[in-house]
Length: 531
Image (cartoon, rainbow, N blue to C red):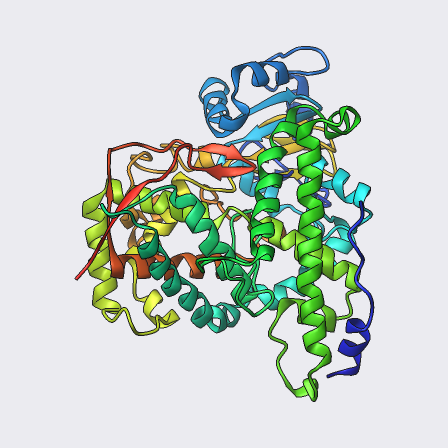
């Protein structure tokens, strides 16, 4: 073992005690109504309309439209709420929801100008309940929640392990193994009529098992948990270990309670000791406890190794320790990347399977392509084969256009700016909504039509730049994008090789919000074995 790794491994890990977001424009250049960039104190600034002139609902003093949100129940349909606002107000509007004011942008040119002008440290708006839980527990922030120099330090380390193309290729065998195991798991879960109910729950197990096995994690839609620790979690077995069950329960607790604290500040929930707050905090405590236990297993394993210097460090945990992050920083970053990965690839695949069942012609065309390139379902699938399947890749891109799980992301302005002809003060939360932008007829022909061919190379000119952003953009884009896409491609190949997907009754999904976009009803499909 290398000396620097041994020093890190021998240090104690902190014990467990007791969002969509909005980046930083450190440049002096500003976005204009035309998508160009100009000084705010120049001609554009002189002719720009005041911030107060941005259209939007009035709301009530102190709470804005939060009361309306609570009474109308649209916080769990916030993607549809934003779509309605876009239809009502156009390419930009502002709204006060509870404790925060947001400015929402829907014009790809405005979005491009703002994102391209990002400084060195793009800043996200915080999910306050996440920060409060860390503060109470006494834990550090990781790459998901940090900002500025510390964020860049963590992100630079993560990029070297997660974003290189060769890393996705290296993890392909492990991800393909998880996908193949999932096919056997699905066969066990079918009833006598071939139906599998609540596919989301089963896909969640696949995603977490894969993530745990392949060492990679993603931040808004993505890949992760198995890879981190280079061993099996056991979620696809008949009787998963307690640690695996705890991981699922804490992830669900955090996701289920976050929305509740988006309209009423979490400090109010904490002061009143509401059930939502207790469940939220307990979820984070369990997350840290489980992650700490897993890290300690890795550290113990590494201490037993010899001659480590010439070996590639295969686990993300081992890698983070080797680059001299303190153990408490390793713990925070592993928890953060796990949090960023939860409920993303699994829900994307739930939308995918449901959509293919509704479009049997597209399903068969996809099956034909898969069997032409990878006809043997007993043989490993390679990255080279995936690259020969443009229709497969188009299916995933089209699902991410219509159902981006990271349905919004945001940036926080560091300087006064002009956006879409309006003066925007520093500190404003600018929200980008890929869900709405992906359904804009100005960017896509027949946007409600599911058409994977639109992503063929020869058709891409018809797609407006910066209208497809399911992984975010730039330095704060999804760190696990390559792994996430590979993971979804592989499991979709295995599904096409093994099953015909059918709906019991034709139902359209509109989605609902549980921190990310998820199916609004149970996905129940009949899975018939292919010959």
